[in-house]
Length: 141
Image (cartoon, rainbow, N blue to C red; front, side):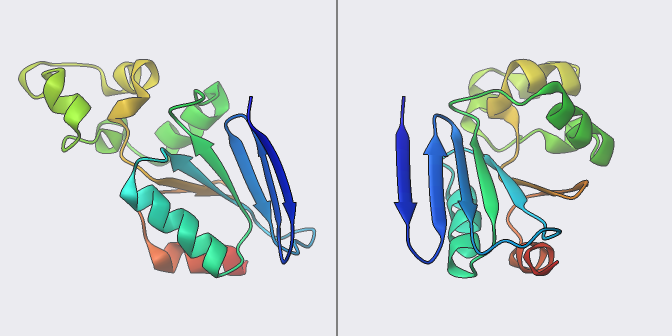
């Protein structure tokens, strides 16, 4: 079990698979949820962008915890499940998904390694992939 606390210009809190950075957050300010893995370079860029711009965020590491039913529902409502499948990933090619028919929604829930990352969520909005403009826009609200 990993636990760490650090108090400086911002508060860093980590407990198991949750990481929350709160930077002088006022009530009503949106927090960005970043879903991905620590190994993903695009996810690392999104995390770094939030830290550098002092934007409040929560990191969900898919390697350590599964998404809840509500999180899956918001993803599938905002995007077609097939558009969330990362056809460039090693898992996709190793498991032979390019050669078979599959239900994208079921496979994503069973195998989150198929997800394109990072996935950004804030205030009912969902964006797939790293986009600095989205991060700064959502962080400013």
